[in-house]
Length: 358
Image (cartoon, rainbow, N blue to C red; front, side, top):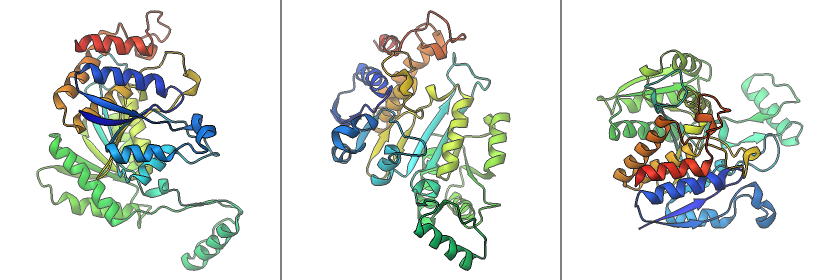
């Protein structure tokens, strides 16, 4: 019996979490779910989008399956996702991007894994708002000490990248490659411009790579990497990146294999792991039984592997792949024509996956 924290999230979260939970249970793995609430829709109830009981539950159970949670753009509370990663030290964001036959894509055979550092870089959230006294003081200090000119009406963000933080994420990427029979790791930065942050990441990655001579290693600049991925993604395998670049490149890679609807994810630390899809909460589709549950279900599949339920994970992945390949009981976005009247809903696609598991 595994005990797992279940966070439905908001927007479409509860619908796709229910689909994933049912599919996971249909594999026969015994799981006791502890359901906790988080997100924009519980703000009034708890006066916070991340109540203490959410963190308490994850710390107790060690593993969580999470639905998407809305993050306001530009204003409002800080991202619950970022807060979870920081407070639980979930330093490795793992996003597999694999082509499944039947998905619309110009890049069949693509099978990439993005390993993104989760706790540092610009996502560390060290920001100073425009016009604040502390920001003006910081700007003056930087101008004096750094011999640079910053416009006085600027907002300022700090980009910390450490040796220790870089070393552990790169080691994670190489260990992932080793355990999963992957042959190549590519580190990705903008080290030619950001010499003291990205440059540090590049140098540490190169140093770590020497411990794994059996795995091919190379470094790419992030702009060139984006071009390479849309030209010849088959040349790449596991990529390890600082936080911001990892966020951007993982969406690019998801696009190569059909979009965020088929892109699962995991956030893993030394003690805890949270599994969730790459896509957002899509509140405009809330309650419509319309959205594709594949990314959430595949996130549950990765969770099963983490729980050492590998046979169940493989069975679930094969069932998802079979349903997508058949192309009958799939949601509108997986049809050749998005207006196809034979498209099914979230629940019905999950039902068909469960049928394949029986």
